[in-house]
Length: 418
Image: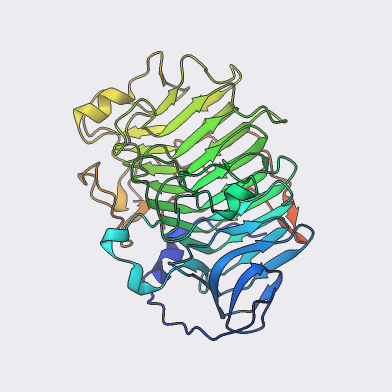
């Protein structure tokens, strides 16, 4: 499976205004054209169609739903549907025609910047395979109540008052592929992953988290390769890595060649930062670029990570003294082998093609015109490490397609030169 190193190309289509129609249809499990759905769904949603989700939908255990390129999955903002996956889900967009889980353009106001207008994609332990490829997920993250289907069926945290993530996956024996996708405008966590063989690659996360929430939150049971992702201004961490939950196998996360910018500043607490490690998680972090993030890699000193964890060749840039000071290694802040960490303001400028490094760290608004590729003069181009082993180099096969985690690059961050 071809891996794409340029997820920002997908952002070129994000500003397209939705003008889909709402053609009535009976509440069926599949439709070859525009339609509406509530209850059980499976089969195929055809290329370019609009599917209006009038209430909670469930892919039954043992069945699958394939969403073809260009499909708009339009959520009713009154019903605030939950998209529950007990079987398998394959959302297969393309760069030119992504799949969109969204709401009508009318509701995309600044007041709704952090979504809350529908639930999220909630994959139960019976979900064996879930693929999101070139998929945009936005404006969700509503808060559960006693009447929520997820609460009644014991899914996610199964209590009222929880803010739903964009994606929850909970099968330690399952397969989860998330690539070339965009997560934006969510109330809290983008993803909350409780197990599985996992690839997260070439994704973009931004404008998420009112008062908490991570971009990628991994728990016990996860064997994950996390690479070439851009995370901008999450409320809390870009990556929360934990072995909590007592599932087998032990959480083992290999994160490399990711770019993190301005993360953690909107949650001024101990856990607000960039990468948080805790509870005997086994972590390997290579070639990651931290630009103006709050802290670098931070550990829970009372429940630290596995001693076999490795940190190497990560790059740190701080525009002001507060940021630079918080990068410095101590008992809580991890310093790795060959990490580039300076005590000087403005040192280690990665020389992005187009991003003002003076942008306020409290800013949560993402400009799709920014370009986080490196200039040809960037000092970060040849500072990466490539001789390490990732989990899924041989690939994960889902729905008959083999997805491989991308090879590491000699540059630091998610993007080299254009």
